[in-house]
Image 1 (tube, one colour):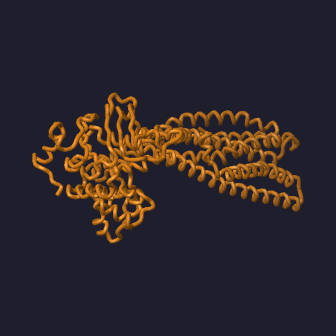
Image 2: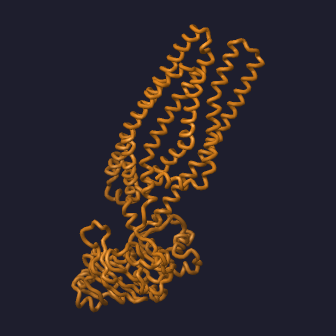
Image 3: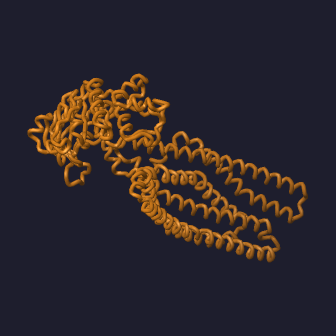
Length: 581
């Protein structure tokens, strides 16, 4: 895991190394200052001249300034290195997520991914900052202080032999008891973010059913459980302070009592006032660095759970990969399903699709009809390899889709999904997702064919009209038509409409389908619909039922031979006829 994270330092190695250098310089000076201060006290005690005192004072001042410069520089380089490390880590995680298949994404909830890229990365950034600064400073200063304490105080420094093990044991005990609560918090953060995400996305539903109080209670419960765990952990960690104070005051009393007695009994020949002053300073430094080491331990232990969650994202392998020598050209829009069966999970008891055999010629218009859960959306998701068939193979342009370069395949298969998504930006920006190089003339033509031009022209800013996040400032029908225009700009070999005209009236639906015939006659068009009118004039209609193809044919043959199709038709038309004109 550590190796995986260290790879994210990259261009921030220099500030990281500089931080270590500056910290080392600061520590050396801080360890020497009490030694020189003790020498100054001894000189004053012995009646030194003012000139000597001033010279030593100037040396101490210079050392203090250098220490300040080193500390300030370390803070600057440390901040740059840790922030850069976090930036690279987030970027690597985001790029990794972009390679995921739908199956990979199904493994992680969106709220969990958000938590990992925000809270978890922030924890790891803090841990990295402490590692390159405090985790170097504390052991160095601790070592220097112990050595200098023995140099200055001799046997008197043995007090640390008693204090240090006691303090270390206490701090480790505190950290060990606090960690389980910290670990539980991260999983609860996922649930808290999930509650927020669901509430914001479903705000209209929440208000429509007057469930605000229920949502408030659900959020309050999630927030309260996090508060309880943090309170429990922080209450334990708070014991660090009194434990530290006990050790500090014990050390002060021991050094002052024994040191004063030695000065009096030996007349200053064994130890003097300056040495005791240095001993007190070094004792404080030693205990403070032990305190810092305990905080580092707590931070690293707390962040270890974040590290595991981040590395899970980085280590996740996409279930869909390019072959060794991928095909990058799709010859035509023909589609074949050869004994295809599919299930979303290997642990699933039943297949979502079973024994599908189908041939679609390039340029055909194919309608797919069926009840909810019959496998309509599942069958089209196998064409651009959003999922791979569990059994059998899917072919596009007479080639197995698994032989194609994924990007090349998906560039030639445009999908307008059932849940239409628009992004923050102008209408033009959203439509250029279909073709970044599209001219305004091409954009307007696509909008005309998708029946979106009329309402776009009704906006004062036309194509420059801003779309709010999620497309909340346009209606469902307008959103669908913009998404269809976006797909048309790709000029794909295969166009899939997954119930994407459900929010438009039948006349607009008919005009859109007529535009397809004129604008993209060579494109294979697959239309999933709930309305018979949307697929009635298709070259081929597939009726799905419980994951199987119940029937295949045109409108007339299905009316004669397929009970399911006939029943849907009669329910929607009351036995009457449908006429697009």
